[in-house]
Image (cartoon, rainbow over all chains, first blue to last red; front, side):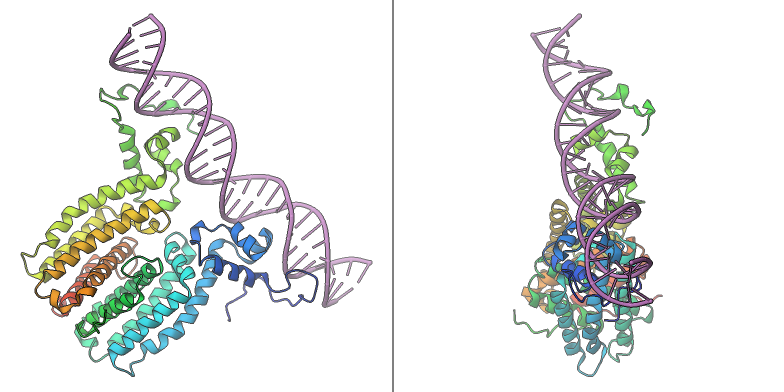
Length: 220
Length: 220
DNA sequence: CTTGCGACCATACATTGTGTATGGTCGTAG
DNA sequence: CTACGACCATACACAATGTATGGTCGCAAG
């Protein structure tokens, strides 16, 4: 998936025989961490746990990654790459706005469901690590940019907002999503109910962009 | 190290005449932590730092507090107690809704400005400590309850929302605030500009509650 | 006076976690 | 055969947390 093995020359094919580990340890480390993250919080996860789970030695771990945080960063890049596809139809405007909005919100929910561990980890950790901070801030920024562009080119939403504030509004919606998806993943009511999550987020987007929060289905 | 015994400033004033648990050191610990938090993140703060800054011994620290987190919990309770007063006029409805909303948002901004260190600390840490988690979740919950009550008793806002969703909407606005105030405190654009912060949050509240985001001053 | 107690300090320790060596094994390319 | 690259085992240096031990000081009651 195109990342960048800039660390070192990892691409070797010497896995012909004997070793119990013929594949890239790097992937094993990533997979193990991803799985551990489904049941543990990132900060209560030690590299020793990852080592045990991946069946890798301490030395090998630090050969491929400079720190635990770097592993998370890779996993996040992986997850968001997957998410940018989900966000694509979101920025189209081929269908009616509210429907498109709801579809985008739903895609986000699925992305978060599929990558709950990793995404929760980064939301909890980006405040305490510079690399993770920049990564996440950049991600939120990309999303905000896309939303801003969409809003400004929307004949209904665009004019309603002062152009100075459009970006701020887009940013606030982005961060609202970040928080609500996180709360849902963390099972914090009332967002632990996915339907409530999606309805509420969709309500927020449509209300703020179109000033219309009614008619958002009322099926409880 | 601190080989110099000059730290014993407590000497004769040890306990002026008071009774059990006069606990002057306790206050010193709280104050020192509060101040340190203005320039450091909570997780990059060791108890040794607090000890140095407060001029207290390790043993005394653990006499008063079971952990670093407990100190933060106390500071947070302190700050939010101060904030509940700020939130009171917020739940009144004596003035026009948008004005009241903006006033409430502004109060929140002031609270966050005055207690930035402590509040940032808890937002960053409530995910990793059970005590802090419950404390913060309860706080968000109290705020959500108040907002819900306000919305439901509001002739303009109440009817517009399905009653099932009212609480969820209130919760999302609460968490939006948490996130945006935090970002402002962390100097993340565009919310590092307090005017943008307040305008955007006010826009969100009025849009979602009243479906009206226009006429929110366009002075930019 | 002296004994007890509560607030407090100094220091050492057990434990856990991180990141950095150091040195060794084993297959394959040269 | 030898060098090298991928890998492992282990130990170490460091930092931080929380606990334990024992001691000082001031006051109050016997």
